[in-house]
Image 1 (cartoon, rainbow, N blue to C red):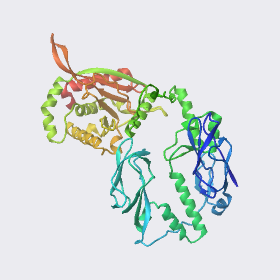
Image 2 (cartoon, rainbow, N blue to C red):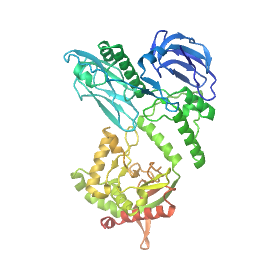
Image 3 (spheres, one colour):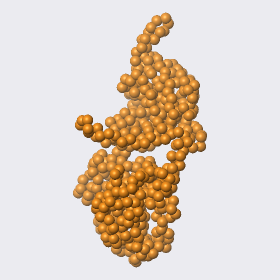
Length: 535
C-alpha cells in the first residue's frame, strides 16, 4: 500500500482547500498524473501523483482544508512494479523514470492496410527554442478529407506564424483545438480516420495502443507496452508547474520560492537539480549586483472607472521578456551625432527608380546596412558578444545586420546575412523580401536569428531622437531618428541642410565611450561622403 501525502504548496503557504478531485477509487494512475486541485490564498495548485498504481482509497473530500503532509490518497502499486521490473526512480537529484531492462523489443504489430482506423494528429515542433503558440487559423473542419502535407492550421508563436501540415491523409473526425487556443508541441489537434499503414508511421492514438495490446502475445508484452507508453507520456508532457517532493523540501530548507524556479526546455517537473541551479543563479546575481525585480501586484483599477483587458500577442510577450533581459543584463550607454545627408539624399533620389526596377528599394535603411557593414569591418569590437561566464569576448568573422521591421503583431528583426559581401542592390532586394515576409506573416524562425548588430530606424515616423536598447547578446545598436531641415553655418552664411540624428547604444562592459565616439564619427563620414564607401 502506498500513501500519497499533500506536498508543499509553496513558500509561506501553510494550507489550502480541496476544490477539485480528478480521480476515483479503482482508477489506474501514473506518476505525474494530476490527482486534485488545492486552492490557497494565493494560487490554485495542481497536485500530481508521486507514484503509479491503482487508487484504493481517497482520504479527502472537496471542501476539506488540508495542510502539507496530510494523507490524501492510498494506492496499490507494489504488484505492478514487481511484475514489470522495468521502471524505477533514479537518484534523488534527477528523479526521472527510466527503463531498467527490456529483454526483447515489443513485437511489431502488422494489421490489414485496408482497414481504416482512428488516430490522432499532434502538433509538431514549432521551431528551435519555441515552446508554444496560439492557433490563429484553422483550414479544415469535421468531415473533410485531407491529404498528407496539406495545411491544417496556422499557429502564431512569439516569433513567426507556422503552418501546420498533415502527417497522414484521411477523414477528419474531430478538430480538438479552436482559434485562440494556446498549444504546445505534442498536443493533439485532430482525430482522423486513416488506413493502418499510415497510422503505424505516425504517433499512435490511445485507441490504437489498446488494439496493439489486445493482440500482444503475453502478459509480459502487455506490461512492456504499458510501461513504454507511460514513459513516453511523462517525458513529453508539458503544462502547469510541478515539483518532486524532494525538490519542494530542499527549496523550503534553503529559502527558495519553488514557483519561481525556471524549468529547462522540454521538462514539466521541477527536480532537485533545477532548485540548485536556480539558487546558484540567485547567488551569482547578488554577487554581480544584478537581481531580478520582484513581481508587483497591481491595484484594482476598476475601482476608479471602467476598464478592459487585451492579451498581449506572442511577439509582444517575447519582446517584453527580451527587453527585460537586455535591461537587467547590459549596462547601457549612448552617444548621439547629427549627420548631414543632403548630398546622400540627392543621390538616393537620383538612383531609387533604377533600384526599384530591379526589385529593390533604395531607402535610407538599406544604405545604412551597407554603411554598417564597412564600419563593422573597421571596428570589429562592435560585432562581438560577451561571454560573462568565461569573461571572453566572442568575435564573429561574419556580419549579419538585423533590421527592425514594424508589423501589426509587433516589432520583428529579420537578419540580412553577410552584408559585407553584398552590394547596395542585393542588400535592398534582401530588405524588401524580408520586410514583405514579416508583413505577410511568412517569415521563418531562421530568418529572425543570427544578427550580429541591429539597426532601428524610426525616421519614417518622424521622431527627433531615439535611445534604443541593445539586442542581447549583441553589444551595440544603431538608432536612427527622423531627418529634418536645419540651418547650418557654411562659408560665412546659414544654409538649409537635411540633418539625420543618429544614436549608438552600446554595452559599456565591452565598449568604452571613446571607441563608441570614433565608431559613430566613422559612420558619419561614410554617410556624408558616399565616395568613401567604395574605398
